[in-house]
Image 1: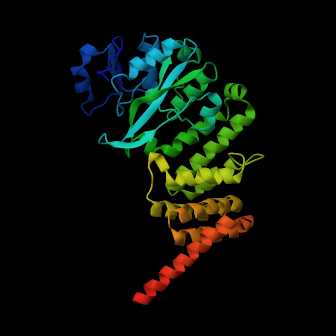
Image 2 (image 1 turned 120 degrees about the vertical axis):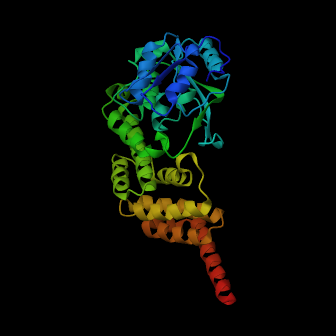
Image 3 (image 1 turned 90 degrees about the vertical axis):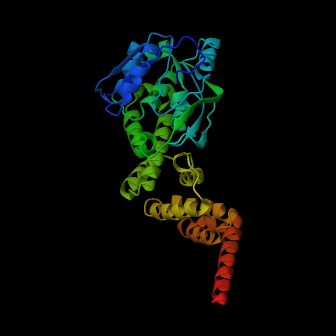
Length: 359
């Protein structure tokens, strides 16, 4: 952070009373800090808010202790804010790194407004954001009642009032590891967001009640998937049933819902699973979905059959094809599905015959 090439930065460090040696490190750099404190606080959101109250600059942002900024991050963000005085904040693409600092995944984004932020469930990487101080103050700052989605809530409230801008290029490195809140408490993010947004009358007025309702249904799907990955099938079923409340399923129809479920299994938490493991999880998800909503289970089985066939997972393609026809009978008329699963079954039978022949 101290390597930034922008000359007028006010560095503020807020530590929650750590006993792990953090204070000794802070003291070594105290002459370069505008202010620092180490004391018990009310959690992460309270600590960030405490820093904002001490800051005096026209633009503000925060960086968690695990994350990194490239040397030009602040100067390029400031330049974008200065180029358009109407902007509430700017944000950039991000690189995810592992605990050792190695590249783990890309985190690209695009231009958004309040509606797309809601429907895509916080597609902005927090450490890349630089806000205009006036925009932060206009919405009342961070909501210190929130512990997980305080950034998502803040982006929504600012974007509902002012334009925001995506600035291409890597603006931060976001660290992922087993103990980070993003990984360890993933489902709790969505649970908190759902409870908070259900009562957000200002956002409902800004984006419209139908859009807010759709956003909440999609958050239920995300919560359901995270509970599924954690092995909590009761909470998975509860959130998925809530996602189906309304005149139409999330994403408008079950085919699009199935596509998003497939993606959520194949690429959980910024990683890409090996094909065989992803197919195994997809089997478990289809089985878990069937008691909740057979038609969605059938649609997911259909897209999983194609996905498996494309990767040469013939046994899996046949398994998914059979469930697609059983749970959503209309898929049985799809020639592509019949071809994919038929070939899968044929190849599987041939392979089993070869194995028996070698015995």
